[in-house]
Amino acid sequence: MTVGFHSIDTVFDWFYSFKMASNTTNSPAAANLWRRRALFWALAAVVIILGFADLARGGETLAPVLLVIGYCVLVPIAILQ
Image (cartoon, rainbow, N blue to C red):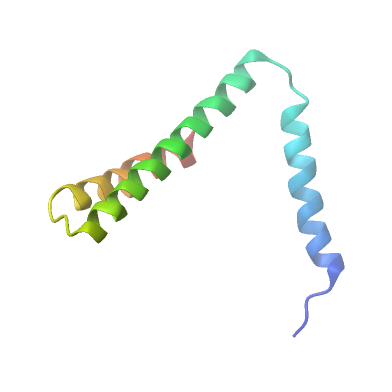
């Protein structure tokens, strides 16, 4: 089954229109919310990468703690922001 370009374009058009609509509000609260979301996503990515790096190094204590904090705390906070 092939997917036509029309259906994919429709999805991207919705995304771009949503993104553009959110950027047209030049309020400081919207900019602050965007920064906070980006901060939580970046923090989650860093913690998860550190957890996997420690796991690859053979860590048995710090790696699971970092991965649980990253996946179970920071990612849901970033999603719900």
